[in-house]
Length: 77
Image 1 (cartoon, helix red, strand yellow):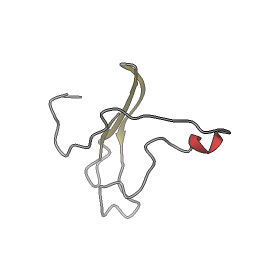
Image 2 (cartoon, one colour):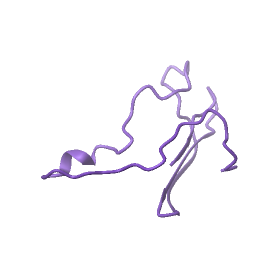
Image 3 (cartoon, helix red, strand yellow):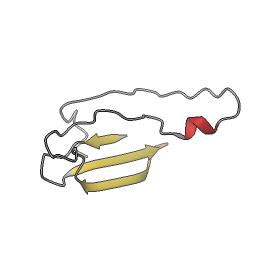
Image 4 (cartoon, helix red, strand yellow):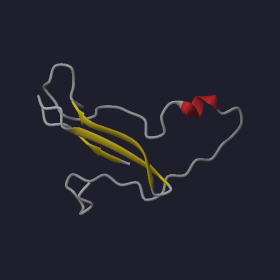
């Protein structure tokens, strides 16, 4: 997963999602800032989404190598 928060007042936010090395989701040129356009950050969210409520039995889900960066680590995405 790659998420780039937009600059305030500019729709330049990005979100990319890969599964098994294949890009399966992409949102680009998105505003990703709060409604008052005063902060460009994410204050809350779910890494796994809301689907965990649909499991009817115990289900283990593993995230591997989950990291946050405040600069591009060299991916040039």
